[in-house]
Length: 228
Ligand SMILES: C[S@@+](CC[C@H](N)C(=O)[O-])C[C@H]1O[C@@H](n2cnc3c(N)ncnc32)[C@H](O)[C@@H]1O
Image (cartoon, rainbow, N blue to C red; front, side, top):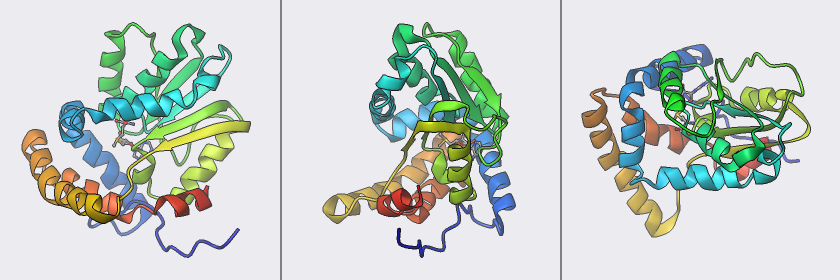
């Protein structure tokens, strides 16, 4: 396996000088937008976010169909990927947990789960870089749009591997930058339009400028696979 030359350690919001500061800034950012997070997700993705969660969870139907399976949705935020996993599980009802380090995001997930019919996941407040689970505990770990925000990607992968049982599976759903004409359109939307709409709806300046910056910084898919 060739050595990875990219110097990127992990997410680095503006002003954060080390991984600890980056982690704190990320948590504060998501906590500040938690009340409007769902609305903004649906508006900014033109509702395509629901399709992405569904497609990602469908990939793991073979695990979700097993009643004894243990599943962790990492960086679960307000829980939409977690709910999508529950829907795919249908009557299989494996044990599904959602973990996030923003209390405000989890509070919203918990309120939403009480209004749903698929059953209630377990919500756990935890840092993805230091998970409170034993080694080899899960059959499946997923993360939707969360992994990119970790302050140390390799440490995040090591922790995922640790909590997965041998032969367990991992699914990371996240953004990449398209190339060509689509890439040009994407950059205009992501850098010019999205931060403005995000700031107006959330009432918070910063997080929606961080989003395109974090995607730009996130290693390309080939490198991500190599790190895995
Ligand atoms: C963009 S949101 C994604 C939420 C959800 N998975 C979704 O698809 O909508 C990213 C989430 O990752 C969480 N997060 C970032 N770094 C984390 C860490 N080190 N440990 C736990 N959660 C983290 C944030 O608090 C935030 O809720």
